[in-house]
Length: 165
Image (cartoon, rainbow, N blue to C red; front, side):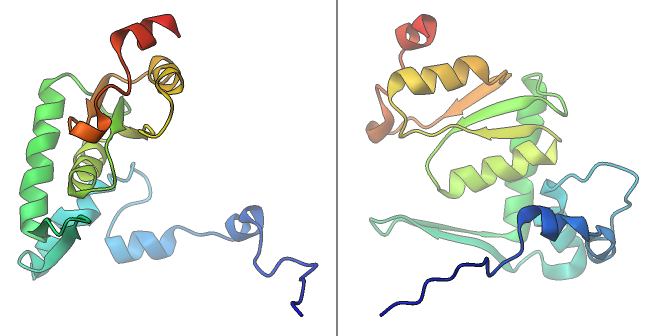
């Protein structure tokens, strides 16, 4: 016989936020509360400055056993390079970038690069039917869409889908 709980075991989101204070994060990350947080910086640059540049930042492996690993310094160099490229494409802080990518090392690279320039990553679900995904793309206000170009994703959204939604 199972027991059914009639009361929540965890506080609500509102209850958790009611007493939240950023000072712990600000102190641990060494950031000032009066300016926006660039979340890409704590992911790699900050760790490198702490002398941990050669430590593993990410070890990724797909279901077929293909893998990739990054040190914090490797992640810093790669994500900063992608960030510079995005800025050259005209992406500004606060700009939206749609990302159609599976959960992979490339997604993490993009996350660090996009947040590193203060832009907003809009995750676009590749499992949506083409018409629904076209609707999301057309209403996202994205400045740029970064899409996966692997066989399993081909044909998901066509130009016609986008124009007809």
